[in-house]
Structure formats: C-alpha cells, structure tokens
Amino acid sequence: MIIKRELYNKIEPYIASREAIIVTGMRRVGKTILLQFIYDQISSDNKIFLDLENPLNQRYFEQDDFEQIKFIFETLKINFSQPAFIFLDEIQLVKNIPQVVKYFSDHYAAKFFLSGSASFYLKNLFSESLAGRKYIFELFPCSFKEFLAFKQVGINLPVQHSQITKPIYETIQRYYREYLEFGGFPQVILKESVAEKQRSLNDIFSSYFQLEVRQLSDFRKTNKIRDLILLLMQRTAAKLDVKKLAEGLDISRSTLVEYLGFLESTYFLKLVRPFSKSPDVEIRKIAKVYFCDSGLVNQTAKVDQGTLFEQNVFQNLRLQGEVNYYQRKSGVEIDFILDKKHAFEVKVSPSLSDLGKLSGLSQSIGLGSYKIVSLNYSQFDEVIYGFEI
Image 1 (spheres, rainbow, N blue to C red):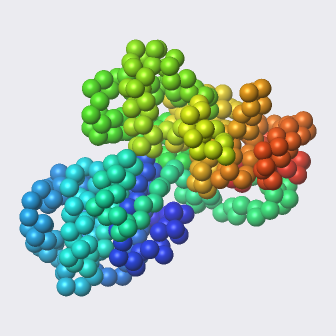
Image 2 (tube, helix red, strand yellow):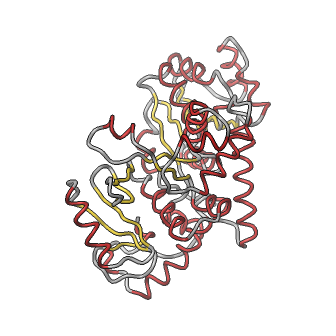
Image 3 (cartoon, helix red, strand yellow):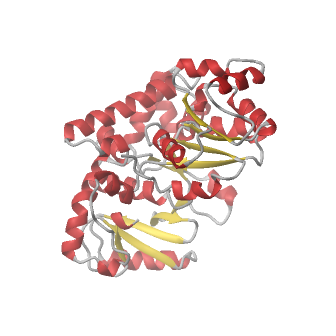
C-alpha cells in the first residue's frame, strides 16, 4: 500500500501543466514512492518510469544524439505523437538530464517528473536550461500526521488545542514519543521493533555517507566530513562556531564552509539564521545547526530530551515555511520564528514565567503570534504540543 504524502496536494495542480516537476530531498524520505504514486494517478498508458540508479537505465542517456534517445523511448513503447509522461528517479546520477529534458520539452509533448537528492545540483543545473519551465518541490521526512498514516493509526488529530484533554493527550503522546525518538523516515516508521528501527537508521546514515558524500561530492578527505557530521550532531540546536570547528578538524575555514554547504544542499542538515528585518544582518550573524530528522540525531548523537524535542519541532516547522531564531545580546532568545511572523519557544515542561518572557519578547520585536511548544501535558492556553505543529 502506497501512502499519499502531503506534498502531493501541492504537486497535483501542476500535473497537467507542461512544466517539468522536480521532487528533491534527503535520501530515503520517499521520493521514489511519491513519484510512483503520481505515476499511478495518470490514466494514460503512454508513460514510463526509469530508475537511474540502475546502470542499464543510465545507458539510455549516454547518446550524444538526442534523437537516438527518442528511438530508445519509442522501443520502450512511448509514443511522441501524443502526450507522453516520463518519470526519471535519482537524476543526479546522469549529468546530461537537464539537456535531455529541455530537448524533449521543446520538440515533443513530453511531460517530465524527476527526483533527486541534491538541491544544489538540481537547482543550479536546471536554472538556465529550464528557466520558467520547471517546478521544484522539496520532500522531507514525514510529519506526525503522515507518521500516523504510515502506522495506520486511526487517530484524528484535534483541530483545536482546547479539545485536547489529558486522556486525549496521553493517547496521542504515546505515538508522538515514538515519532520523536525514531523520526519520520518511512522505512523506519514501518519497522516493528526497536532493533529494526535502529538498524534502519544506521542504514540510512551509511547510505547517505556512501552514496552522497563519497560518490556525489568531489571531496578528497571524506573522513573529515564524517567527523564534522558527528561533531555537529552532538551540537544539535547550538550556535555554529566555524572557527573552533575548523581548528578542531584541522581544516581551513573555507573548506569547512564548503563542507557545510554540501551537507545542507543534500538535505542532511539545515543552518538556521537569526531573525532580523535586514537580510544582510541575518546572513552575517551566527547560525544554529539542525538536522533532517530527530531519529537520526537520536541514533547517532544521543542528545538530551530537550534538544531532541527542539530538533523535532524544527523539522516540522520547516515544512510550513522559513525558520529563524532570535537572540538578544543579553542571551534572551526565542527558539523559532516562522515566516518572520510567528514565535515558538520549545519547553519540555513550560512555566508561567516562560509564558511571560515569550509574550514580552515577541511583542517587543513586533510579533503578534506566539506559542510555547510543550512536550509534557500543560493547562496553559498559550501552549501547544509537538504533535500539533
């Protein structure tokens, strides 16, 4: 059974358009399954799905003459005299795909659906060749709502916070604790035992390192990136001290920045910038580091409960928009600001004083919306739970 991901609702309006649809995201988040779901929704038989991790499929695109590629498609039962739907999975493995897509989009009624795991590659190589003729969608690990769907749990999350009584909280929280600890990768969610989930998380990390860091990057000292990843995971939700990290790894500052750019462009981590009305100030100031999934962090770094909860709240907020943090010189801070409008402070067990501080700080920087996100049950009206994000 294929579970419909929430991202499909954003893609659906563009399925009938001529523009190419590109789905990008971290390895193992479900890009292939999402493409297969879209493939199944298309009623036409004039369609094909090719996995480009298969070396045999890669050979189809080694022709310099794109009409030869057309001939190959035709032998695979594609008819270019009518609308054709071409699905290509893991396109970062075939370097001339942008040119192929452009050629067939220009000369034939071909609609492309593409997936890949490196945003830098996809966004940059497609920027010129398909300017104005593509839509890029980012897929992340499952939200908690999607987690429940994969688990086939018949729980309808309350629409209003006021509906969450303590018994309802305890029912939902049992599943949220599992989601918090093991994260939102589909293959992990579907595993039954703790040992199987842990093995899957180790496999995801190993696959990312082998297939992204070692194959996709051109870095010579991949052991340095490995050490950097482990150091950063232990510093989840902390400010990034580039100078100290570079010295500790015995690499230059510019090399470290290059490594961070690669890790971010392949969706392994995210650098969260401080909130500012000025974009220039935002870029110059120190970023905080978060990762793609709380399960990976928990399995690799064993951070404390509060940090793991903050990581999980981040990865769900990023599904909704741009995420920043705010901190004054005095050290007083707001954990997250969503789309420069909504403040979120993350607490395991919030107090009345926490609410007062958040209210005052939010209003002082012009934010009318603010909530504390609590892990434990709370009776404060201004509090929501992680599973409500």
